[in-house]
Length: 470
Image 1 (cartoon, rainbow, N blue to C red):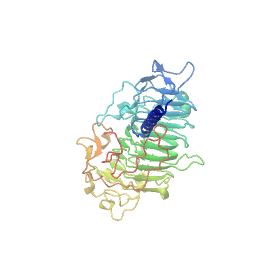
Image 2: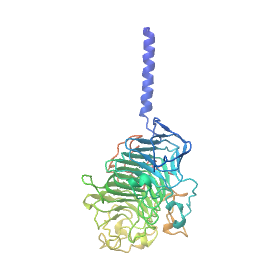
Image 3: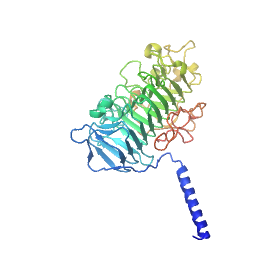
Image 4: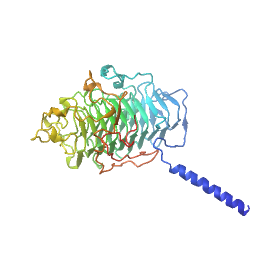
């Protein structure tokens, strides 16, 4: 090989390596490049073999394909099931996915994944009767992580009509019905940029987990009870930039009930969420509405926008939350009815709550609370507060549209909950803290982006960050 050729070859190799490095360094929040391992065929219907109650699955559901499921699927310990962008998984009956290993679901903004029950028409008109709404019937039994489940990572995915009662091998992992269930305090659960539509009870239930629940949309979750997230027993992480509309009870609820020995206590940072018309299907009196901190739960709650929810942020007295390690403020409430205004700070006698009234909240607490009010007191709000601080969505149900009840608003429909530039929420956020960041940043095996607290209150930021569902 002559010297000139060697120089040319070296130059070409260097250029190629540089191009590869630039490609690897490129950050794209909507697409993770993942190698295909053990492709799963989309022919026929995935179902258990004769005599079994689940089909063991591992490998890759291939981009753009439709898979039909006719029985429970199980990801065994040590195995990984990867679902690529644009996949549709149709559950043709009350079946689900049990996970003792790892589930990675990698939809993209342009090509989301759908986990759904086929042939069902959504009833998204305001005021639809919950008793006949398929969103509250649990057509398939959801994703159930076992006690040793390593990771469930879900990105840009629609989870629809789930929450049916588990059966067979999945019922061994949990007999309770939720679209997404996780119970390993040492494992990781990520749900980001996704949609959960409909459930009988909670959309997500955790009994210990490291979680990042970021930039999602929750609609119609819970028939007569249920939250967007019901976290218990040592759940730590972040719940941020989510839109929760029409929950039976709350957006997020945090409790340390059921914590295992040696597991850190529940501690969740709840920030920059938009929570709308929640709490009106909750059967129990004095419950439901927006954000709940209960038994021994610590955390933070800042920059949340609560619109026409039955109750405001609720810090529970019995059994009491970990008030010594709980911080909250800079939260914004809008009320169209006296019943909402009178429960912006829920009372002890009505809902066992002892929520304080930070002076950083909007509207200013002293503008509508009696001068002698103290946490837990029943009060009658100054009526001037009603409809007085419209958050100015691009298009939203504030003020409440004529002819509708507060309980009638439970889906996004044609609404757009981004803020107008003239919104009083703009620039009012508190940013002197960070995400708890319990799950590492990783395009495939972790969280894509830990979006920090935003300067605008609510899930949508006027600089284009935050929730990306428009």
